[in-house]
Amino acid sequence: MGLDAVEIVISVEERFGIAISDEEAAACVTPGLLVELVRGKVENGSEESCASRQAFHRIRSALIESGALAREEIWPETAIPIPRAPVDQKVFWEELKAKTGAKTWPSLERPKWLRVSILVLTIAGVVASMGLVSPIHLALTPLPPLLMLWILLRATESFQRCIPRRFATVRSLVQFVETASSIHWTRAEIAAAVKEIICEQIGLHEEDYREDLHFIHDLRLD
Image (cartoon, rainbow, N blue to C red; front, side, top):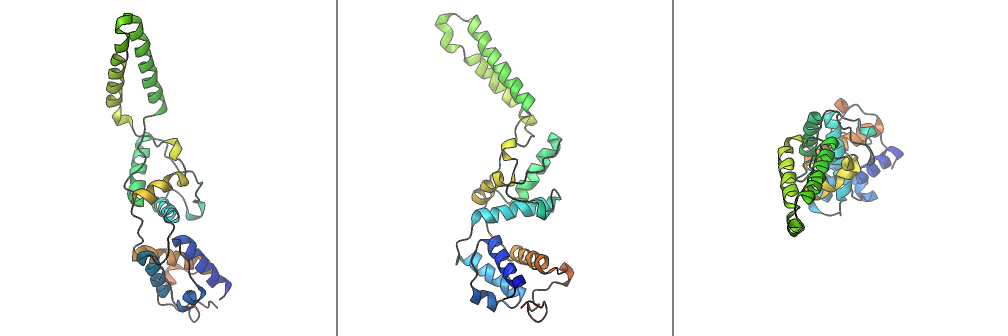
């Protein structure tokens, strides 16, 4: 097996979290057969796939599709390109969730200045209440500030449009995609990933790619 062929097999193993034996690799003489091999391992559970690796590639594909980053720029520690405007952040965040297929997702939060303001007002309310009540009613002091806090939180719900900074990297989102979403590779997704790997490895133009091309006779891979 030539170097290019070995690199293709290794890349496929890493992408799907599977192991491909030399015998299996030798039997895959076309991209289509390689796709079916991967499909069988992933769908039939013949290999224990790595959910976190699959989740990472889901996130990477979503970021590429959105035009936010190029494929070679995306790694686990890559920072999510957060839009400046809160309104744009909300749209971007919702689209990213939809593209990854995650069922749960980090909630957007209020801007920092608003969170600080709510905290200051709540503390001020507690201090003011303590100065206005007699010691016998001290136990009831927190009630008015808590009511005010509830009102402030309800009144500012529409301002929850900012992406939390603690979820600012690709790695921080993997847990949501791998556990909340049912990670399942469709045949089309597997085929697209295999096509991407082969074209990148041997410098083949996508328009020249076909699943029935022979690795040795057509693509000149030893």
